[in-house]
Image 1: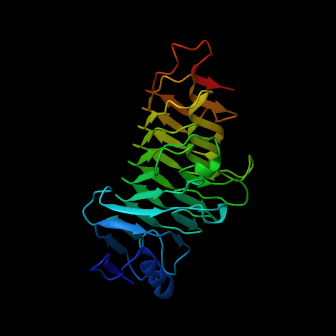
Image 2 (image 1 turned 90 degrees about the horizontal axis):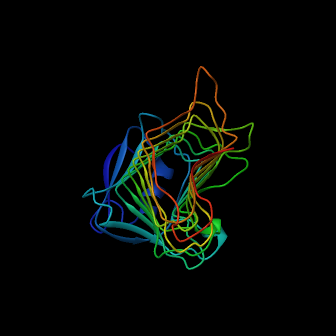
Length: 289
Protein backbone atom coordinates (compact mmCIF):
# COMPACT_ATOMS: atom_id res chain seq x y z
CA UNK A 1 0.00 0.00 0.00
CA UNK A 2 1.15 3.52 -0.77
CA UNK A 3 -0.59 6.90 -0.83
CA UNK A 4 -3.83 8.29 0.56
CA UNK A 5 -6.94 6.30 1.45
CA UNK A 6 -10.24 7.15 3.14
CA UNK A 7 -12.06 5.50 6.02
CA UNK A 8 -15.79 6.11 6.29
CA UNK A 9 -19.21 5.57 4.76
CA UNK A 10 -18.10 6.59 1.25
CA UNK A 11 -14.41 5.75 1.63
CA UNK A 12 -12.07 2.96 0.60
CA UNK A 13 -12.70 1.25 3.95
CA UNK A 14 -15.87 1.38 6.04
CA UNK A 15 -14.07 0.90 9.36
CA UNK A 16 -10.67 1.16 10.99
CA UNK A 17 -10.57 -2.62 11.22
CA UNK A 18 -11.01 -2.98 7.47
CA UNK A 19 -8.08 -0.61 6.93
CA UNK A 20 -5.94 -2.49 9.46
CA UNK A 21 -6.71 -5.81 7.74
CA UNK A 22 -5.53 -4.35 4.43
CA UNK A 23 -2.31 -3.10 6.01
CA UNK A 24 -1.60 -6.50 7.53
CA UNK A 25 -2.42 -8.29 4.28
CA UNK A 26 -0.51 -6.16 1.79
CA UNK A 27 2.09 -4.25 3.83
CA UNK A 28 3.34 -0.86 2.64
CA UNK A 29 5.80 0.29 -0.01
CA UNK A 30 5.59 4.00 0.77
CA UNK A 31 4.00 6.43 3.24
CA UNK A 32 0.30 5.77 3.83
CA UNK A 33 -2.31 8.30 5.00
CA UNK A 34 -5.76 7.20 6.15
CA UNK A 35 -8.12 10.18 6.13
CA UNK A 36 -11.11 9.46 8.35
CA UNK A 37 -14.52 10.88 7.48
CA UNK A 38 -16.67 12.49 10.16
CA UNK A 39 -18.59 10.07 12.34
CA UNK A 40 -18.53 7.82 15.37
CA UNK A 41 -16.81 4.46 14.85
CA UNK A 42 -17.96 1.91 17.43
CA UNK A 43 -14.97 -0.41 17.37
CA UNK A 44 -11.60 -1.27 18.82
CA UNK A 45 -8.56 -2.33 16.83
CA UNK A 46 -5.10 -3.82 17.29
CA UNK A 47 -2.00 -2.64 15.44
CA UNK A 48 1.08 -4.85 15.06
CA UNK A 49 4.23 -4.69 12.96
CA UNK A 50 3.41 -4.10 9.30
CA UNK A 51 5.73 -5.24 6.51
CA UNK A 52 7.56 -2.30 4.92
CA UNK A 53 6.95 0.29 7.62
CA UNK A 54 9.92 2.38 8.74
CA UNK A 55 10.86 5.99 9.49
CA UNK A 56 10.00 6.99 5.91
CA UNK A 57 7.11 4.64 5.23
CA UNK A 58 4.85 5.62 8.11
CA UNK A 59 1.10 5.06 8.42
CA UNK A 60 -1.04 8.01 9.54
CA UNK A 61 -4.64 7.90 10.73
CA UNK A 62 -6.10 11.40 10.78
CA UNK A 63 -9.38 13.26 10.87
CA UNK A 64 -10.27 14.36 7.35
CA UNK A 65 -11.32 17.78 8.71
CA UNK A 66 -8.52 18.03 11.29
CA UNK A 67 -11.14 18.26 14.07
CA UNK A 68 -11.04 15.55 16.77
CA UNK A 69 -14.62 16.29 17.84
CA UNK A 70 -15.88 15.14 14.42
CA UNK A 71 -14.14 11.72 14.38
CA UNK A 72 -14.77 9.57 17.45
CA UNK A 73 -13.60 6.01 17.94
CA UNK A 74 -15.63 4.67 20.84
CA UNK A 75 -15.50 1.29 22.53
CA UNK A 76 -17.00 0.10 25.82
CA UNK A 77 -14.52 -2.32 27.39
CA UNK A 78 -16.03 -5.04 29.57
CA UNK A 79 -12.96 -6.93 30.85
CA UNK A 80 -9.22 -6.61 31.36
CA UNK A 81 -8.69 -8.59 28.15
CA UNK A 82 -10.38 -6.00 25.96
CA UNK A 83 -9.46 -2.89 27.93
CA UNK A 84 -8.40 -0.66 25.04
CA UNK A 85 -9.76 1.29 22.12
CA UNK A 86 -6.45 1.03 20.26
CA UNK A 87 -3.84 -1.54 21.20
CA UNK A 88 -0.28 -1.06 19.95
CA UNK A 89 1.15 -4.59 20.07
CA UNK A 90 4.72 -4.11 18.89
CA UNK A 91 3.51 -1.59 16.31
CA UNK A 92 6.06 0.94 15.04
CA UNK A 93 5.94 4.18 13.02
CA UNK A 94 2.22 4.91 13.31
CA UNK A 95 0.80 8.44 13.53
CA UNK A 96 -2.58 9.49 14.94
CA UNK A 97 -3.78 13.04 14.29
CA UNK A 98 -6.90 14.87 15.47
CA UNK A 99 -9.07 11.91 16.47
CA UNK A 100 -11.05 11.26 19.66
CA UNK A 101 -10.40 7.86 21.25
CA UNK A 102 -13.00 7.22 23.94
CA UNK A 103 -13.47 4.25 26.23
CA UNK A 104 -17.06 4.23 27.47
CA UNK A 105 -16.79 1.09 29.61
CA UNK A 106 -18.34 1.14 33.07
CA UNK A 107 -15.41 -0.56 34.83
CA UNK A 108 -12.54 -0.07 32.37
CA UNK A 109 -11.11 2.96 30.66
CA UNK A 110 -7.92 2.51 28.60
CA UNK A 111 -8.06 4.54 25.41
CA UNK A 112 -4.59 3.51 24.23
CA UNK A 113 -2.64 0.44 25.30
CA UNK A 114 1.03 0.20 24.32
CA UNK A 115 2.98 -3.06 24.61
CA UNK A 116 5.25 -5.50 22.84
CA UNK A 117 8.08 -3.09 22.05
CA UNK A 118 6.01 -0.48 20.20
CA UNK A 119 8.39 2.31 19.12
CA UNK A 120 8.51 5.55 17.12
CA UNK A 121 4.78 6.22 17.28
CA UNK A 122 3.15 9.64 17.56
CA UNK A 123 -0.15 10.96 18.89
CA UNK A 124 -0.78 14.56 17.79
CA UNK A 125 -3.82 16.71 18.54
CA UNK A 126 -6.07 13.89 19.71
CA UNK A 127 -8.61 13.62 22.51
CA UNK A 128 -8.03 10.62 24.80
CA UNK A 129 -10.79 10.16 27.33
CA UNK A 130 -13.25 8.12 29.31
CA UNK A 131 -16.88 8.89 28.55
CA UNK A 132 -17.49 10.25 32.05
CA UNK A 133 -15.42 11.28 35.07
CA UNK A 134 -13.80 8.50 37.09
CA UNK A 135 -13.86 8.08 40.88
CA UNK A 136 -11.37 5.22 41.20
CA UNK A 137 -7.60 4.97 41.69
CA UNK A 138 -7.47 1.71 39.71
CA UNK A 139 -5.12 1.52 36.73
CA UNK A 140 -8.03 -0.06 34.84
CA UNK A 141 -9.08 3.52 34.11
CA UNK A 142 -5.68 4.86 32.96
CA UNK A 143 -6.22 6.63 29.63
CA UNK A 144 -2.85 5.58 28.21
CA UNK A 145 -1.52 2.34 29.62
CA UNK A 146 1.88 0.71 29.12
CA UNK A 147 2.41 -1.84 31.87
CA UNK A 148 5.63 -2.89 33.55
CA UNK A 149 7.79 -5.86 32.66
CA UNK A 150 9.01 -7.32 29.40
CA UNK A 151 8.24 -4.47 27.02
CA UNK A 152 10.48 -1.55 26.02
CA UNK A 153 8.31 0.97 24.18
CA UNK A 154 10.78 3.71 23.32
CA UNK A 155 10.77 6.91 21.22
CA UNK A 156 7.02 7.51 21.44
CA UNK A 157 5.64 11.06 21.23
CA UNK A 158 2.48 12.60 22.69
CA UNK A 159 2.13 16.15 21.38
CA UNK A 160 -0.81 18.54 21.67
CA UNK A 161 -3.39 16.08 22.96
CA UNK A 162 -6.24 16.52 25.42
CA UNK A 163 -6.34 13.82 28.12
CA UNK A 164 -9.74 13.99 29.78
CA UNK A 165 -10.97 12.10 32.87
CA UNK A 166 -9.45 8.73 33.81
CA UNK A 167 -7.84 7.63 37.06
CA UNK A 168 -4.36 8.24 35.60
CA UNK A 169 -3.79 10.30 32.49
CA UNK A 170 -0.88 8.00 31.65
CA UNK A 171 0.49 4.88 33.31
CA UNK A 172 3.78 4.45 31.46
CA UNK A 173 6.42 1.91 32.51
CA UNK A 174 9.74 0.68 31.22
CA UNK A 175 10.98 -2.78 32.17
CA UNK A 176 12.97 -2.20 35.37
CA UNK A 177 15.66 0.03 36.85
CA UNK A 178 18.31 -1.61 34.65
CA UNK A 179 16.26 -1.62 31.43
CA UNK A 180 14.87 1.84 30.75
CA UNK A 181 12.71 3.08 27.92
CA UNK A 182 14.34 5.85 25.95
CA UNK A 183 13.18 9.12 24.44
CA UNK A 184 9.54 9.37 25.50
CA UNK A 185 8.22 12.85 24.66
CA UNK A 186 5.17 14.39 26.39
CA UNK A 187 4.70 17.99 25.31
CA UNK A 188 2.00 20.59 24.62
CA UNK A 189 -0.72 18.40 26.15
CA UNK A 190 -3.56 19.25 28.52
CA UNK A 191 -4.24 16.75 31.31
CA UNK A 192 -7.73 17.55 32.46
CA UNK A 193 -9.92 16.19 35.29
CA UNK A 194 -7.83 13.15 36.16
CA UNK A 195 -8.91 11.58 39.42
CA UNK A 196 -5.69 10.38 41.05
CA UNK A 197 -2.56 11.01 38.96
CA UNK A 198 -1.59 12.71 35.74
CA UNK A 199 1.33 11.04 33.94
CA UNK A 200 2.76 8.23 36.09
CA UNK A 201 6.19 7.54 34.60
CA UNK A 202 8.60 4.76 35.61
CA UNK A 203 11.96 3.54 34.25
CA UNK A 204 12.59 6.18 31.59
CA UNK A 205 15.77 7.52 30.01
CA UNK A 206 16.11 11.05 28.53
CA UNK A 207 12.48 11.90 29.13
CA UNK A 208 10.87 15.13 27.92
CA UNK A 209 7.82 16.58 29.70
CA UNK A 210 7.37 20.14 28.50
CA UNK A 211 4.74 22.82 27.89
CA UNK A 212 1.90 20.80 29.37
CA UNK A 213 -1.05 21.86 31.53
CA UNK A 214 -1.98 19.66 34.51
CA UNK A 215 -5.42 20.30 35.99
CA UNK A 216 -6.79 17.49 38.18
CA UNK A 217 -10.39 16.90 39.11
CA UNK A 218 -11.77 17.84 42.50
CA UNK A 219 -13.35 14.55 43.63
CA UNK A 220 -10.38 12.73 45.18
CA UNK A 221 -9.90 13.49 48.88
CA UNK A 222 -6.38 12.07 49.18
CA UNK A 223 -3.03 13.30 47.91
CA UNK A 224 -3.00 13.94 44.15
CA UNK A 225 0.15 13.66 42.02
CA UNK A 226 0.06 15.90 38.95
CA UNK A 227 3.34 14.58 37.49
CA UNK A 228 4.87 11.46 39.05
CA UNK A 229 8.31 10.15 38.00
CA UNK A 230 10.40 7.30 39.41
CA UNK A 231 13.73 6.08 38.00
CA UNK A 232 13.56 8.59 35.16
CA UNK A 233 17.27 8.98 34.45
CA UNK A 234 19.56 10.80 32.06
CA UNK A 235 19.12 14.15 30.34
CA UNK A 236 15.47 14.66 31.18
CA UNK A 237 13.81 17.94 30.22
CA UNK A 238 10.99 18.92 32.58
CA UNK A 239 10.16 22.45 31.56
CA UNK A 240 7.54 25.16 30.98
CA UNK A 241 4.71 23.13 32.51
CA UNK A 242 1.65 24.74 34.08
CA UNK A 243 0.81 22.65 37.14
CA UNK A 244 -2.50 23.56 38.75
CA UNK A 245 -5.18 22.40 41.14
CA UNK A 246 -6.52 23.35 44.53
CA UNK A 247 -6.31 19.76 45.80
CA UNK A 248 -3.53 19.03 48.24
CA UNK A 249 -0.67 16.75 47.19
CA UNK A 250 2.25 17.04 44.81
CA UNK A 251 2.96 19.22 41.82
CA UNK A 252 6.07 17.53 40.38
CA UNK A 253 7.29 14.40 42.16
CA UNK A 254 10.65 12.82 41.23
CA UNK A 255 12.16 9.80 42.99
CA UNK A 256 15.50 8.12 42.17
CA UNK A 257 15.83 10.18 39.00
CA UNK A 258 19.58 10.36 38.30
CA UNK A 259 21.72 12.19 35.75
CA UNK A 260 25.37 13.12 35.17
CA UNK A 261 27.15 16.44 35.71
CA UNK A 262 28.09 16.69 32.03
CA UNK A 263 24.65 15.53 30.87
CA UNK A 264 22.25 16.89 33.47
CA UNK A 265 18.51 16.67 33.84
CA UNK A 266 16.88 20.08 33.53
CA UNK A 267 13.88 21.33 35.51
CA UNK A 268 13.07 24.92 34.60
CA UNK A 269 10.34 27.50 33.90
CA UNK A 270 7.60 25.42 35.48
CA UNK A 271 4.69 27.23 37.12
CA UNK A 272 3.33 25.23 40.04
CA UNK A 273 0.29 26.16 42.10
CA UNK A 274 -1.03 23.41 44.37
CA UNK A 275 -2.67 23.14 47.77
CA UNK A 276 -6.06 23.16 49.44
CA UNK A 277 -6.61 26.20 51.63
CA UNK A 278 -9.28 24.27 53.53
CA UNK A 279 -6.91 21.43 54.44
CA UNK A 280 -4.11 21.18 56.99
CA UNK A 281 -2.38 18.46 54.94
CA UNK A 282 1.01 19.28 53.44
CA UNK A 283 1.36 20.05 49.75
CA UNK A 284 4.61 20.16 47.74
CA UNK A 285 5.32 22.12 44.60
CA UNK A 286 8.43 20.06 43.82
CA UNK A 287 9.34 16.91 45.73
CA UNK A 288 12.68 15.18 45.08
CA UNK A 289 13.66 12.01 46.88
